Length: 117
Image (cartoon, rainbow, N blue to C red; front, side, top):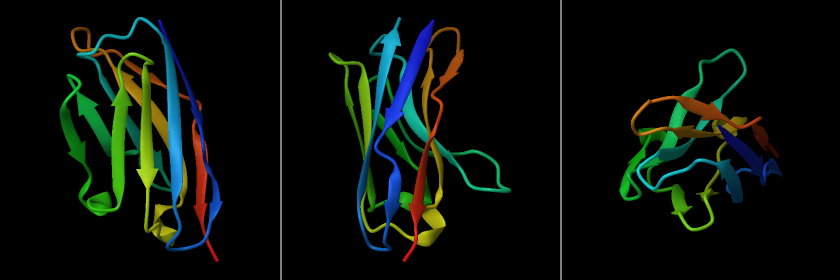
């Protein structure tokens, strides 16, 4: 079993920055994928960024150059630094772990990010 706890969401003005953190507990291996997804009202959940096998990083096109994902395998944590935030980045952001062998997925409870003036 894996438990995920997110923190760091909130309200920020356009152009501002936020840093999301996710602490994972349970059986986590460095080869497991860890990442962030988001879901805006009325839309499907979508990938923001993830790290596979500890070093392969994927970013959604809409965040390239603005967001940076990082992972600390020793602490089982994954962070998302979000810069140059836009109103369209408003969503609930979810931490995700996908097990490398079973492909079983685990989700955090989500943290709200609101970008508004």
